[in-house]
Image (tube, rainbow over all chains, first blue to last red; front, side, top):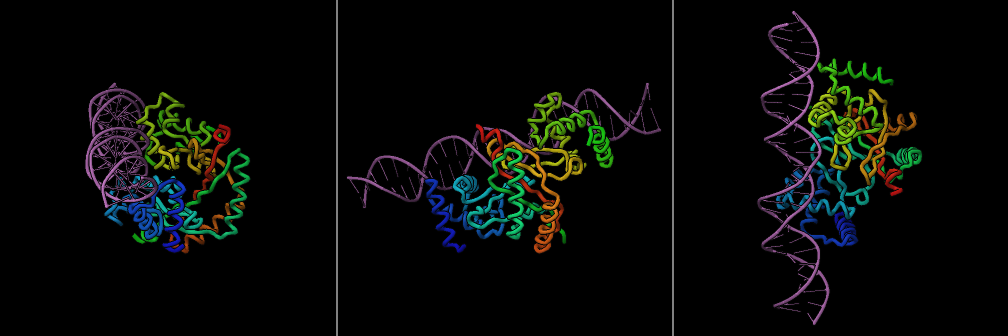
Length: 147
Length: 147
DNA sequence: TCGTAAATGATACTGATTCTCACTACTGTT
DNA sequence: AACAGTAGTGAGAATCAGTATCATTTACGA
């Protein structure tokens, strides 16, 4: 998705939620797109220091409610945000247990399909209504292995 | 695993970590086993009110370092703990996005194997050293669907 | 039994996140 | 183009799950 298409899509989603696509929110989206993976609030503010922390927190909450971004929680103390799968496509995360960094990766479509049907069966057995799945790989990233 | 076998295993793991298997820790393990899924600190204290909160926090940290329990973080504000997979076997979680509750489920061994090999390939491609995977199903539990 | 080290638990503290609120910037109307 | 009304902003205060402190208690080994 090009930056323009992304912008249009974000504008539409915000419009549906009766929210404006303000300059702060544009800069936030732009920082997230440049990030190449989920970012912490600290990373976002470091990327674009014109964004005050309170604005980042507030707008990420609004963007999440509008379905534009997704909040990712790992085991460390910092929440991370990335563009929603609606915008970037379905993917998973490599979570480094040493430094906390998170990278994206995708699986073969066939495997996703196999998984989805197995999960649907398991969910039904528990009387659970499934919305989505979340698959993360925990380990050590290239940088931390070398260190 | 019976309660006695579990006790022996926990005692061994704590011994390896130069930690004692004290009465507080026994009660903690017992509460976690009775829980049938990951529990929050609040739930643990509610289950066994003789356990002070600070002791629960401290001992869960120690038990996690000893490999006896695992800390689970979902999107709500409360960490949850469950017995480590070493003790209960590999499994996954159904996470209710309405009430935050977490239930256990398992997948067919064949599907786990397929998944593991696909993940190994993806990890290698990213220069990532994989330790384990985490697969959760997000949705609405039976109670919340009815409500 | 004694001495030492570990565990306990009430309480104080920390820090990520959320809330508050006076101020600013839009948007649509006349 | 000025106006009124509404939404967004951002600095600082408040919140609260989780962690650290430390005097007291408990348990192990000699």
